[in-house]
Length: 207
Image 1 (tube, rainbow, N blue to C red):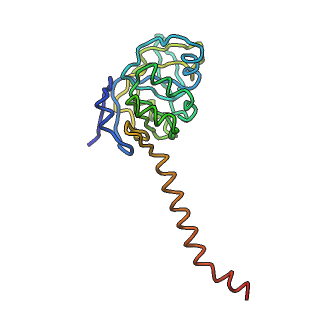
Image 2 (tube, rainbow, N blue to C red):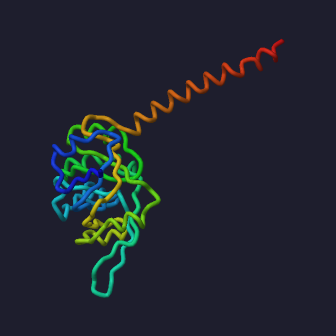
Image 3 (tube, helix red, strand yellow):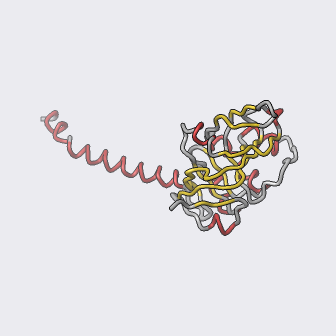
């Protein structure tokens, strides 16, 4: 059975999740990547909407406007979340968001900030931009369109948006960091085993 969460997200809802958990999202999610983060934090522009307990999607969508002036999502794939690493801490503290979604993982600074502010980061599969667009049932509004289509804030209504895999939880765990250590250990063990298996070549050479 699918685990589905709906916005607004409470502190208790995200605290129940741990790295590796998979869920889907209903409700509102707002696209925002590095230029929008900078526009808000570095240029001190006021956020045009309340994002408290909300969800942010690191993505640069392709959107078209129909004859009636309604926006339609054509394609929206995740942006590499590490692009937001230097600003993520301040962004979550300033907005009160509970969820960030993007491609790949994020670093130590964001991990610490997620634990302190009770925020989670999730990855969504890359290469599925058209499929993800079909999970967006409506575009409610757009802000900061002057930044350009990919950089604007698109307020999207989603249904079963995902799958979302928790990569940073509220307990200070980081899935990508943990896996990096695990794979490094396995690599060292494999190399040591390989060295033992071919050591006879060195012995023969020195005879």
